[in-house]
Length: 173
Image (cartoon, rainbow, N blue to C red):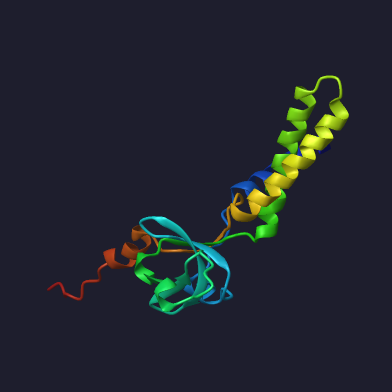
């Protein structure tokens, strides 16, 4: 009986932790992003950029192309009202590590299958090569999704306050 209670408590806690939504900050959390971080901005379309600054009315970020000459024309200005979501991307090290693990696993699996007589050395060699190629590719490609730090209020949240109308008219007795 005690183990069933413990098991059900653990399952309830685990389910709650998995299904819980992480809190999404307000616009102040966007203004607090350090300059130079890679973010993903979701408007009517989604695009990555390098954060420059944010004000109460707009977000300014730079293009991902790292030119030797940065000009004001390279800046992207997005009105705050057009932004649906802003996500801070994970750093390149985390993406490289994830891609290296994926590439190493695929390479080792292929090495174990391809060379039947020498499973160990072939799997090790091809696993190492896959890990190196995966790490290089993961540095450029963001495999891991970043954390959402801002989500615009939905139309239902904005209209909730406007649907309640208070009438000041007096009813005659």
